[in-house]
Image: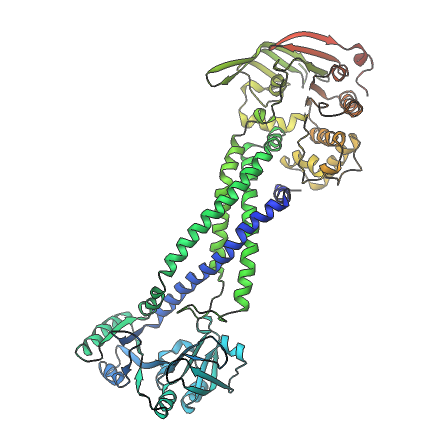
Amino acid sequence: MTVTYVLMQNLRRNPLRSGLTCLAFALPMAVFVAALSFVVALREMAEANERQLRLAVHHKTSIINLLPAGMRRRIEALDPQRSRLTAVCGMRWFGGRVPGTPNTLTSLAADADTFPAVYAEVGLTPAEVEAWQRDRRAAVAGRGPAEQHGWQVGGRAVLESTVPPYLSLEFTIVRILDDPQRANVFYFRRDYMDEALREAGWDADAVNIFWVKCVSAEALRSLQRDIDALFADTPDQTKSEDENAFIANFTQAAGDIPGLMKAMALVVVFIIALVAGNTMMMSFRERTGELAVFKAIGFQSWRVFAIVLGESMLLALVGSLLGIVPAAAVLALAPARGLNMGPINALEVSPAAVAGSLAIALAVGAAAGLWPAIRGLRLRTVDALRTPG
Amino acid sequence: MSATDIVLQDVRKVYHKDRLEIPVLEGLSLRVDAGDFVALMGPSGSGKSTLLHLIGGLDRPTSGQVRVGQAELHRMSERQLTAWRSRHVGFIFQMYHLVPVLTAAQNVELPLLLFRMPARQRRQRVQTALDVVGLGDRMDHRPNQLSGGQEQRVAIARAIVTDPDVILADEPTGDLDAATSAEILDLLRLLNGEFGKTIVMVTHDPRAAARARRTLHLDKGVLHREELHRAAAATGAGA
């Protein structure tokens, strides 16, 4: 038998109370780990975006406003030597969904010739690039919808647009992406979409955004200035921003998500601390005599302190794991499905989120057990054991 | 002086409540020889439990000296007293204070967690202690599966498992019926007679006190009188 064993057995002392306290940890921690995963995913995405050195150029008024596709040549002409930019890729929002399903995919029509270069991190193989450029219907899909709808490389996929003129297009899958951050995307060729738009009598040759792949952070900043200056006196004034700033437009549209998450986390932590603190204080009061005997038979005060604190932290750990493990399993088994979280295409419980959640749970457990533990430390054996006489 | 003689000299103990001074022991001197079995009697508030706590190193005197064997308890720090208790004193309380979620064997093993001792040796000690108190066949029972008398026996096994020199019992039969009380007192006499343990027992019950070698009567913090029990002395310390 060890002191740890005694701690674990103590959790069985009042199973209902321990169980309810564990639930008080489990449910908020399940939400908390998901929220923390969202923040971690945002941060990882931001770091990945910074590495990509991509500049987003869109209409100054709104990204909804279309820009003429021909502006791409003028942007490229800013750097004929290709000393600052590598390639420019126009993209147009399609807003497609699989017929009969409710969820809209992040479906974008991209310039066929420059997409592989501007999105180099997607990692198309030479054979896939060749397939992408040979077939007008070529498409690159994320793992989420591919698994959900049974798409396979070389197979057929159909999407219908949720925006006018509500096109329905058929595609040939040339690559399925495993990148969790692109689990819900669907890239295809813009010339294919333009052809369908023309057939429907709509304007083609327009994009929502130009992605400019830059060679360095300095080049990105200089191009940002030059591009906006180039179109300053035209009907199509632009706003250029790096990828993180661009994505922040979406996240901020839904409010300060990281700030909201932090505020929520603080409230959750405070509530759990109150619940657990109350439980630990009740448990301590019930066992004052027993803990006094521990001291009487030779347990030093610091050991009694550690026992009470350890019990609280163990309760927090068990409760948190009861919340975190199922939450992680649910998110791992259902990546991207049914999730609609702005720039985040997929949510996975990262080790950093689990570690962070456990650390916070242990800190809450320690905070909740601190006062009873101090009471245990200061407990005067004779007072606790005193009987008349 | 023997290794476990208990000697108190001119011990005074005063408690403070708010600004009030409450004297509990007033210059008490006492000697308990090693191997003795002493009962402490007296009305409530006479200082019996305080005296027991001082002998056990649970409390320190306001003035005076408390020696148990070579240990000068009045000079020791809280930490030193705690370490000393773990090796030299076994406590038995009226309310047993067993850990309800541990088995009898695990409750008895608790004091041994403080010793560096192989698990096998610990198990042997626990088995021996429970055999001595007659509960060798109840090792895996939890306190709620035991009677009050059996719980007190487990508490006694916990008190003796470290093989202490001195056993201090505070109303060990106070919560038990007459027959069970007699069994517990028989056990204490066995520990005194067969195993040579020095026992100091606080009790309100004259019949329980009569099972000791002598009874010290306290009143208002001073030793009032001493009573030698011929029957107990004559039978030696055997049960």
